[in-house]
Amino acid sequence: MILYTNCNVYGRPDIKSILCNNGKIVQLLPSNNINAGKKINLNGGWVYPGFTDSHMHLTGLGFSLESIDLVGETSKEEALQKITEEIKNTPKGTWIIGRGWDQNKWKGKSYPTAKDLDLISNEHPMVFRRIDGHAIWTNTIAMDIATIDDKTEEVNGGIILRDSSNIPSGIFIDNALALIENHIPQKSKSDIHRQILKAQKLLNKFGITSIHDAGTSKQEIEVLKKMLENDELSIRVFTMINNDPKEYESFLKTGPEKDNPFIKIQAIKIYLDGALGSRGAALLEPYSDAPNEKGLLLLESSEHKKLVAKFNKANFQVNTHGIGDRAIKIILDNYQEVANSNLRNRIEHSQVVHNKDLPRFKELNIIPAIQATHCTSDMRWTEERLGKSRIHQAYPWRSFIDLNIPVSGGSDAPIETPDPLEGIYASVTRQDKNGFPEGGWYSDQKMTLDEAIKSYTEWASYASHEEKVKGKIKEGFYADFTVLDQELSSNDPRMILETTVLFTILNGNIVYQNDGK
Ligand SMILES: [Zn+2]
Image (cartoon, rainbow, N blue to C red):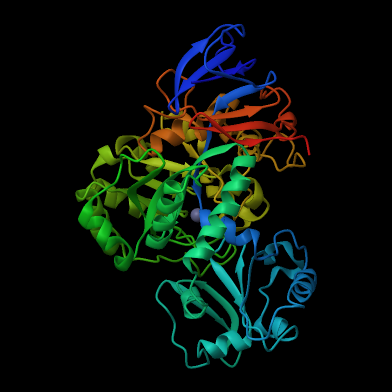
């Protein structure tokens, strides 16, 4: 038994100590003067239920920690400069991989080209994912390897940008990414293992005890299971299997695995549309800044419907990526027609929701899995894409919550930082870290602090069918805690960003301790 003592407990001012045994909370106690188990002093820290990031990419995060990071580069020249530096000592022929560029932050906002990268190297194939993950920027040698030229045909659900002589310019969007990326050498199990170790270390540092992995490969599941066996896993992982028959067939046959408290296999991730940044999100009406475009569907609606029916019938939850109001309407229609509502199917992102479709989330028992920092990162150009008449439909968190719909919070890391405190801050302010815009962006959709915390705890646990064991500090629940150096308060939201994680406790054990450095 372990007794965590000298602490304050979120929502329970009467409690000073928490007695844990076998990974669970045994007793909440009102005093520090108790003799039971091994005593650990939490130094007056504030104990919150362990934070869950309910939409992120685990190996993607690990990979981003070891690849070229172009997030925040404010011009194409700066991005090219950084790439030049980073590849100095890389042997010729090695693929250079990176991510995070955003032409919307660059002068002129136009897409870069292969020619820009060719000036750096004709001997390293290069692929850089856009910040939203829905487009790549590549160079000529990579296109040569992939035998891409002016005769390359268009891909369903994808876009290949071309120059005036029809030669692909180096930008590939959504389903067209694979034309290049299929040629990148495959990850080995040891690559995956190393990337998960790197990612979970960072997650624990941010106070995260659980994640929902939005697209887990069979190989990744094997590595996770091995790590658990070797006592190396320091987070709980709710997986979403990739939508690829080679990946899911074997799981479909054996059925969901719900009994392991650390690794759940009971959901599938399906992409229906793209993202707003690359105008891939499927909208009901054309983009305000591109009147001939309405976005992309990566799957036919009928295909999506078949998958929903197939997976729900086998008792797997279906989590569909839906950003634009057209995609979201199709998902809701298909869920309504063929889904089992007890499975709490989800719509990942749920960013632009038509007014008429909001109440359907409640009626059909659908969970919106939202990422508050997407709103505050993208708000500067969201209105250009959507226009005045439907901007109020964007990131409608308050509308969901007012309809009694649990909103599940997350980061979509590595697209955004996985820091839950940044997510909570964005949820309650709808401002960026500099406090822009004053009062918050479409501030009527803000969450309260309690709701924002719930989105990372209780509601996230509901979204993975674990609300009876996780997301609250309660006897019988998992002893998963995020211990902060102060109580979060919405009076001065900036303090949320200035709060530090003292301890991260998983299953009763400390997996991260702040040593003051
Ligand atoms: Zn994602």
